[in-house]
Each structure stands twice: as structure tokens, then as C-alpha cells.
Image (cartoon, rainbow, N blue to C red; front, side, top):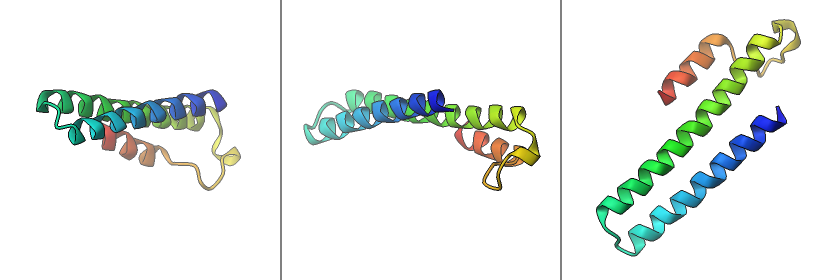
Length: 87
């Protein structure tokens, strides 16, 4: 799903930018409150990207019969485990 890939890539790039800001804040000895707030934003952005990845895989799993999916596709049990890893 190209649209999903673009969304995921954009989210990850945004998270990378936020992480760069956290590193700069630490290097600049910014207040703890500011650093933790920015760090929480990075964490949230990464989690959202992870949920989009899993959601996309679930949609593909449901919409594509087993016989048409390749060996690299995840089982529903593996998808559930990945989802719970982020939850």
C-alpha cells in the first residue's frame, strides 16, 4: 500500500526531527520539563507509526486470502503480538 508507506515514512521522519530536537535540548542543558515533553512527543510519534504499520498489515491479512500471500506475511497471532508490544 503506497499511501500507507508514505504516511509511515512521514511519521518516522517527523519523529526523527523531534528526536534531533531532544538531543539539541539535552546538549543545550534545557529545562528537564521541556526535554521530557519533547521526548514524550517522539515516543508518541513512533507508536503511531507502529500502529499504522500493524494496521496496514492487518488490513492486508484480512483482505487477501492465505494462498495469495507470500511466506513473509504475518499470521494473525504474530500481528496480535506485535500490536500488544506497542500497547
